[in-house]
Image (cartoon, rainbow, N blue to C red):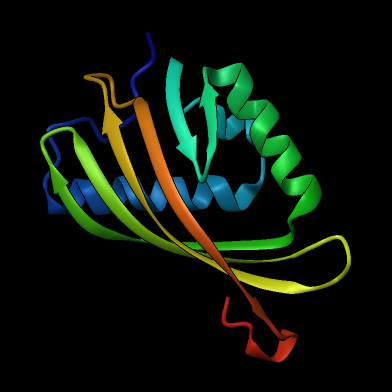
Length: 136
């Protein structure tokens, strides 16, 4: 099995590194690349949607970026422990009608010993913004 460095147990530096790797991957908007960071049987809750396994992750992310255009994400460390990281994030996107939004949220991540994310629980709220209000 492939390892995804850095591996748990996390310290401050490795938790920040893991978050930056995730931010970079999500900003690539490449579902196949992103899915490789998760276990084959990964479990997600994204808002009110449940996603299970890499194939569903790819399907979910592909649909996300068909609806969320001009996507830009920022993540920051909230807390960490041995194999878990909590993240605060915000992202901006444009919907198919041209309206802009900023989404705020928190994620709780749990990793296996190989550094793959086994669980991802995300709570997200969207706020309409004007194009002039964009920060990212």
